[in-house]
Amino acid sequence: MEWVYITLGVIAVVAIIIIAWVISTTNAFNRMIVKIDESESSIDIALTKRYDLLKKMVDATKGYAKHEKETLEKVIAMRNFNKNASIHEKEEFANELTQGLNALNVVVEQYPDLKASQNFAKLQDASVEVEENLQAARRVYNSNVSVYNQKVVTWPSSIVANWKGFSKRDFFEAESAKRQDVEFNF
Image (cartoon, rainbow, N blue to C red; front, side, top):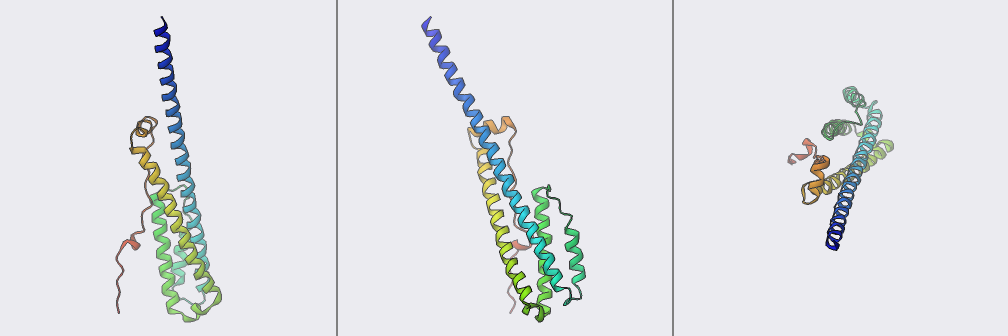
């Protein structure tokens, strides 16, 4: 009769260990999802800051450029960016902002007085800082996604991932314009 109690005790201990592991693994997945969401929010913040800066740069160029109207309209159209957009939609939004910044660079090159403006110089410095912050936010996001995706696909945590419906997340991809090779024309 003692062996029955010992067997039941061993089964109970093993069951408790398995249940604790499942709970712990599920909580780890949930914490990782929160970190991914937080880092995605950082990308949203950086994109918003980039948008605001781009709008200020457009406003600063109004008196100097004839074709800034088209750029300004494009920027205003970007205002309707949805914070709940998918990561792919955010990539497209980032690409549109990059095109807007490229259009402003053309304006700056055409108007030397604008380059000399202290306010515009400060905006350009702020633009560099915003771009660095955005790149850092993207790196943090991709790092968090990498850790999460690794846990989703590796055994034994993949058992819990499949059971609880945790699936791989998409990485934030480089903007298509920045993937192309740079040409040097002298």
